[in-house]
Length: 337
Ligand code: 13P
Ligand code: SF4
Image (tube, rainbow, N blue to C red):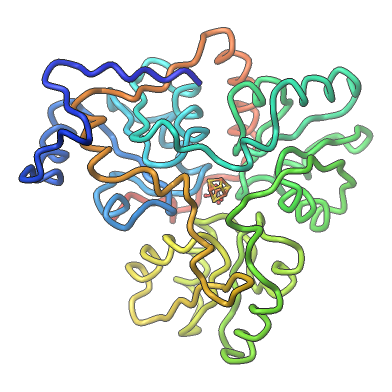
């Protein structure tokens, strides 16, 4: 991704930010003046979640980015998500408050390595998780998200080999539930990789009635404890709908803010890491975005996501396939409340 950080007229930088500025009021003013839609992922800080126009999992956010009438999309998430917004809505200005907001899964699959693989395996269908760069998407046959991977893999021709990249845990999970044999790229998420099955087992003994919900980026040993495996939005729906009063949450901890809002009175216990604490379950990339950086991005109209047109067109093909092959959006794909 090429990002442009051009300070516009009246632009300011984080170190020069006037501490007396009410950034929330300024964001309110700027979003109206500039016709901005603020999209946020569930792993963002609570204060960003609370000011977003729309909050969702990767598929919900992609759909929203594709259909918005706003002139500007301020994407509070990580780079691959903002890139998808730009690929689907090239006429819009797409802002990413911190251009360093990457993803360990994206880093684990480089385009030149995938190109070599594809050239050596011309008959293999390359199914790529949305947590990947635009270059990697452009080399893929179809993109999937955690909420659509199983549904999409079930529709693929049975007589063709499949490579699932880059998340080996999500790939292994999809292979188990669909019965489809797939070759797996050796990538993983640094956040979901760190939950400890031993510590989770101890926690479960203390809370035997609490269902465990887990994101499919977790290891198989964690998913073995799960009463529900799904995307961030699907996990949220599960805890809202179920009658139990406490739940163990094996995904990034900032989603608990949304759970507490939508299911008040229930208790959400973060799944532990190997030291028994839950501090590991925080995505350092998502944490780079702050309300101050969001405010500055609206002032400066930067950092801006730009993708060369030839690359965008190539990456659009498997993304369009994803939208066509995904399950319909549930009613719970929601505007932020
Ligand atoms: P979701 O599509 O479930 O929101 O997952 C995105 C992600 O990056 C999880 O780590
Ligand atoms: Fe990437 Fe993991 Fe962060 Fe999700 S939680 S954005 S997969 S590093």
